[in-house]
Amino acid sequence: MYRLLLLLSLLPLAAALAARWWFALRVLRGEGRRPCRCDLERWFSRGGADVIQRGEASALEFGSQLRERALETWKQEDPKAAGSRENTRRFGLAVPPLSVLIAVFAVLVGKIPVLGAFAIFLGACALAAVFGLMSLPAELAAISRAAKKARENRSFPRTEDEESVVRCAMALAWDQSIPPVLRWIGK
Picture 1 (cartoon, one colour):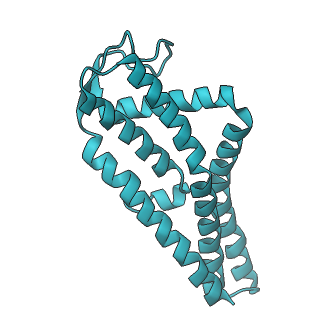
Picture 2: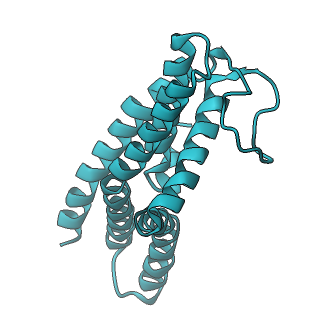
């Protein structure tokens, strides 16, 4: 039974890690360091502590800010869907460590073998990864809407900078969609 759970857990974990590498890490390493120039007058009229104060920064910094602004707007427009996405993220944060705790105690009392504890942990990670990836399209749509507004404002004088920022924002969403336990792999 534990071998079946282990096998069924490894397939979604491998798919999640492959998707993270393809859609997040590869893009962030390629585009994230690109220096971008932005017109701050047109870049998000609202101020705040996280607003970039200079007109030049890396695409990763602008992409991170674009994603944060998209999430803020999404929370205002559709709080139920944004809350669901946040709950999925919390699930991925809490469930894998709790499953380790429960599995370790079960091994210590002799209720399950060590392979069973490992299978339970991987199963919890796989479940969190699947939930995170299933809730990702709504966040990507919110980022697309914010990117469209940034394009309409013509915040970036060069379209290459604008495209790099949008790709970095999307890549950050892909990176955050899997549980933190799996994000440690590949750093």
